[in-house]
Length: 190
Image (cartoon, rainbow, N blue to C red; front, side, top):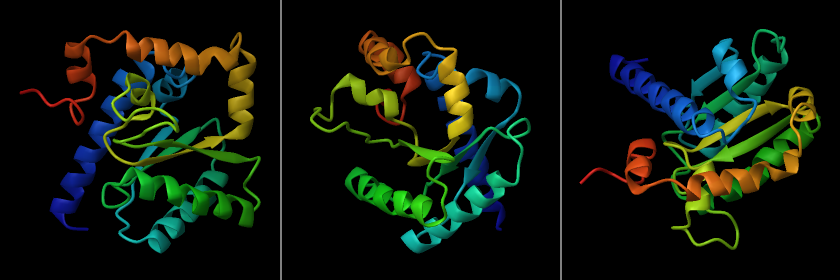
């Protein structure tokens, strides 16, 4: 790996961690993300793949690796994709291949993939709607979540079905200066 690539990966990891700390945890969008991050059980892995086949192979390797780690040591992985799937429609379509990979290797029910993207847009929602900010990250990301851990975390949350609506309310309440600070890849400072 060249030093330029290594420096880029370091920057991508830092920006992703900043997003995780300030947006996901800081805004309270995921009520159970803080503890694993504080315990250093969140892995942020940059994937330098440039083709879908390479990405599927990298995702498979990451799932296989996570399978070998106890959740007490590693809870989750954020696979950061800086070199591909920049178009949200392409990214969204690729998620079908991700589901097929989980099915093929009997990982459905054990893991789920949460999706984040700089241009994330919920179906039926205008692209500029604030609620899309709940899933907007500095890079396309495939977040590998352990189903068992999620079930345990949700058991301690009163009315987990309200989380998406609470998140929408939270991002809708952001002032413009807060959006600029938290989402500089979307709202650049003029």
